[in-house]
Length: 291
Image (cartoon, rainbow, N blue to C red; front, side, top):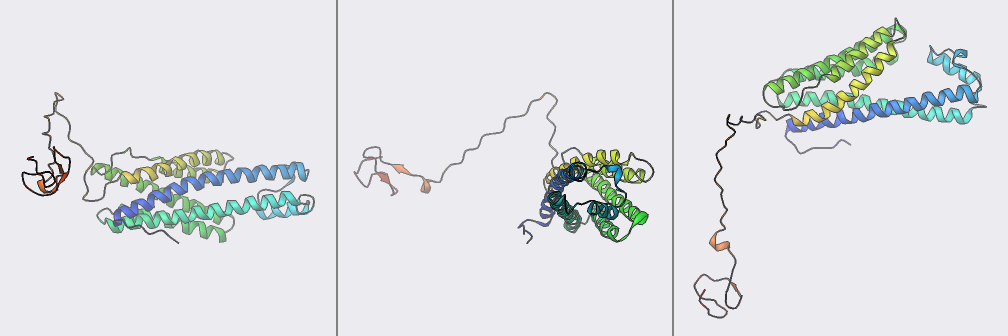
């Protein structure tokens, strides 16, 4: 069940963008941790449990790879290892699905940002970039071989365009005096590197190195987006620009103002007997002393 925020539309969209960006930052870290555990567990299973080497298996095709593992006794001599690998694989799939959900929510949040402020068209096109990425992810499941690779590249390119428009949006906010932070381009650079690495992987063996660099930049980029969107002032809000001080550094002192409590609300006590005075007059109603 989604959480409902009692916020103005612009602030609500900002909050949703920040939360989804932060979750993506966390999910990407967890996906890498689980993937490393899966790879290490697979290597131990091959070498220690099954007594095989990478060169003995065809890892170019996931289905053939799985069939070879089963044929070499994965579910007999390596049953415990098989259970561990299946759990790790399911965990990786779950965390990836959660990540894709956050990508979709980012797109819908930028769409809400556009609905709250239609003067900046950039927000609408940002949401299209995220939706294009999700469509490519789903389509890539059913498109095999080279076609699937092309669909994946197009999806990542769509996401890279969205990241570039996010950068342009923050530049515009800064120009309008509604954003006081440093405009970050790391998310776009990371996604652009990922696209280039994915294309290079079809021709060379250096693609994974580019993907590693892109991963680090994307991670920092989502962290920055989660932080920076909170600093954007709503349309019509107070600008963050401050008046520059005079050249000599002198500022006139502001007169101090004191809040005086109305007479009727003041609490008085008799100086003679200490009783609380509730009546208006010159004499204490308790002891009769003149105060």
